[in-house]
Image (cartoon, rainbow, N blue to C red):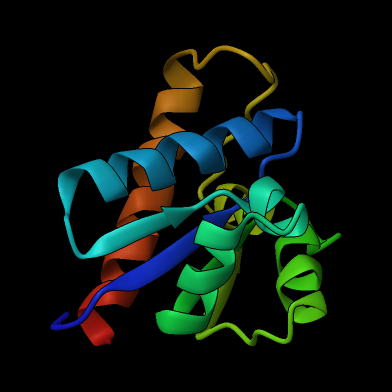
Amino acid sequence: MENKISIAACNGMSALGLVGRAACNDLSTENDKILSICITATAADNQEFNQIIKKYPIIAINGCSDDCVNKILKSKGIETEKTYNIDKILEEKSLKVIDPSRLDSEGEKAVKELKNVIEAELKKM
């Protein structure tokens, strides 16, 4: 990956939202070419995030099939490079998370799996 890329995760108050936030925060902390977008601030027309979503390609990380991240970005006229749904990724790996506020051992496994999926996608870009 030569240029910066944005990742926008679900911020929902569910266990899936927590997994998305944790994974995307980890990735943006570990790699200075990855920017984590606060989708809630984007929806609220935060100028900083509205500039970033127009500047860099975005990977959308939805918690579930409601696709809130994509809907918010679409309302801003932004198309994503790639979209993932955490619920489907975890289902494929037989992982289940239930706590919306704390990561237990299953939650940490889920974060690691999501990070692996995103990192594999970034290598293709």
